[in-house]
Image (tube, rainbow, N blue to C red; front, side, top):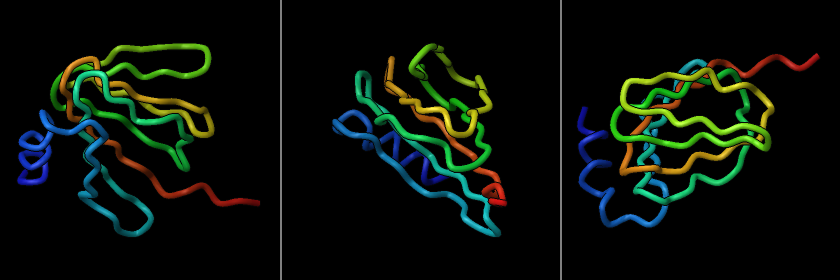
Length: 105
């Protein structure tokens, strides 16, 4: 996938997250995100059901009460409405798949 190669090439020189949209149709989307070691993807909320999939490297996924380290090929179901951040423990690339946003009653 060319997008992942682009991120891998840009990663060593980037001091901020590299974010590329891979897919966006019918309310579902996929992002590829690259984090150089030590770079933080700032705290935020998942707007819908989401899954994190690490392609390369290791990342630390942090909430206010927990921290998890994920490495290549690990997956994690990101809970909705839980503030979290992601930090590159090493140079890393991961995908985030978002489901359709929940309908509000």
